[in-house]
Image (cartoon, rainbow, N blue to C red):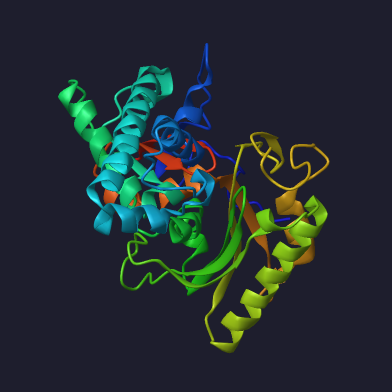
Amino acid sequence: MPVITEHGAKILPSVELDGYNLEIRDEEGFVGDRASRGAFREILEEWREPLRKLGADPLGDQATEDVSKKDLDALLAKGDPEVGGLIHSAIEAFAKELERVIRRFLKSASWRDTQAIVIGGGFRESRVGELAIGRTEVLLKSGGTDIEIELIRNHPDEAGLIGAAHLMPSWTLEGFDGILAVDIGGTNIRAGVVELNLKKSSKLAKAKVWKSELWRHGDEKTKRDEAVDRLADMLKDLIKTASKAKLNLAPLIGIGCPGLIRPDGSIETGAQNLPGNWETKTFNLPAYLREAIPEIGKHETAVVMHNDAVVQGLSELPVMRKFDHWGVLTIGTGLGNARFTTRRKK
């Protein structure tokens, strides 16, 4: 079984990983839980409750969990002033929580001297999310913390695939057009082909998702083994599609997955939102996929798996390498996190 990079590695081709999946607790629980997508909805509900009692809730009878990101964005842009005021109140309260979370992270040993943080995850792709993140940067800087807060540039769904290419040593990509990538989340599993475009940029600055497939496993009662079987089928379909298009795939699969990844590819903690038990030592996703897809283009398949926030952060390497120390936060089902030190050639 070829091994090109250790799973969950601390030393990657272009960065050193100072830490990821950091879990800070206080008297209220995990600090990161206050800055998740669900936390924003809880804040919105808290603002609606007193208005509801007065019969003055501008969102009416619609349950908070049923108000989509698109709905909130549309109401913010074109709704009446009272609705806009309600949403802005929730944005302000969430930004204050996110500011506090970031300050706690910056005090930890692995996050000290952080110069910039890129923020991704599903929350970032809404206008409400962008405003909350922008307001957080203002709060940090007005409080004396000189740090750059960047929005992830690729669509978060695509960033979780593109970053997989940065897990691989450059020599493994030479002569190939693309690689297979997987982004496993608490509600979705996405598989895709990342087109490398190395002739346009040897640093992968022009890498993009050529084709992808999405399966919303959160909508189904799915067992773990059924989920990984479905994933293998998605990857096999992508291999066939790439072959028909004469896209030369490297014999590589890069995976982003929630949790703390052991060097052997098993998951130590943090996979509780996935279907079934992914944290037992007897389950190994990279090994399963190598067995299900032993060859790609007549070459033996190699699989590299890392934490999903790490992979999403790596998609920003072409623009973040200007910083020596930088981090990523992914605001989704939970708050994913990673801190990087850029490796410089001596």
